Image 1 (cartoon, rainbow, N blue to C red):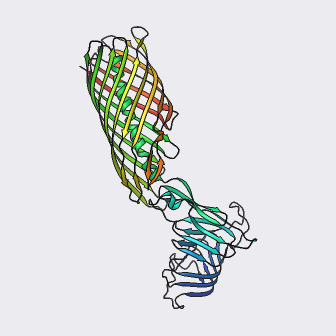
Image 2: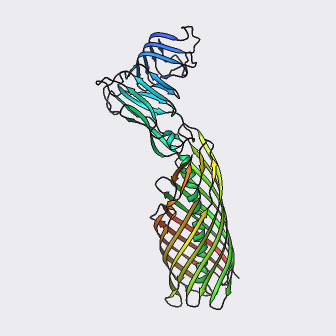
Length: 494
């Protein structure tokens, strides 16, 4: 019996063909993309030899196949699906000359199976086989999939040998898996995170990246007040943005950030210090991506801040903040399906910076400093559309920094001035110890470590009351690499 070019894909042998509830033939050839599928439990296929070639497919469905020899050649497929099936037959390729995929005459068959299926072959098994895992899901823990056996060969013939290789990677739970041969068995070998899991685990650190960029923008405003002669406080607005490359080992992503901060403040004279007291609000959007995964971020934050400049040239900056983050996740799956999810959470933070101004002359100074800032985000709990359960993702980021600022003011006519600055610092973030849970399994999602910060920029005062400023910084060396970050704005002094 030949099923070939004249048969459309999806050719079916049901239990109503009149062949004693099945089909019986000496040999059956399925080729050229045709498919034979046993759709009913009572369907049966009896043949001394079954040959599946050129992309043809024998889909076991719900029925039974009885043969002495199964030949899978030139990409012919045996589709097991989710069944636990025992094939009492020899299995081989039409021509078995080499295991080298690049060699002339290489032949192979395909075994398609779902993660909950199993194929046992009792017979002489030889040839090359790609094992394709067809299903994909966000459900299931690591224990459900890792090293799970999907194929076992019972072959007592020492002269036959079969090679099973991975035909694809399948999204199963939080990780991708592929088939791996281990002796006479084929198991699911765990690989990297799925795109959906990677995006879900990236959300906390990506939120922290926005917060730290806002914190840097606020610290620049606090520094500018000390750098500006006669600055009594005022109203200001600043754009901030940048790009982040995150590589924490398990979790990897790229992130683009754009936002704006607005604030008002006032300088108050004290007995031993001048105090800047103010408040600000921040609004930011982030775009996180890696492979097919993406996250759209929205952030709103509020801060109160102060900066004290003491008579002995010591300064102390401080701030307290609240932030709210909303995130929408999207990713493709290995079987072509799409998954999505949404989550939101809140964070509280602080910043402290202590330094000393060393006057070079009346125009310039060096300012060594040390600072610590921290963000503490509450946990989230949600489920994506493919069934992946995400929870316990509270996230803490404590950042320690030691560095030096250098600036010099050039005065011009009509109360105009230009103050360029340069910044060099060592930064350490302890966020690397964070983790989240997916389907009950704890997975590291922290992005921390040591880095060097280099920055430069300047402020131009058009009048005594109106000025503009801009700055650039680079942060590199830790899990979070920030190739560039910009802030630019205007301020009006009272």
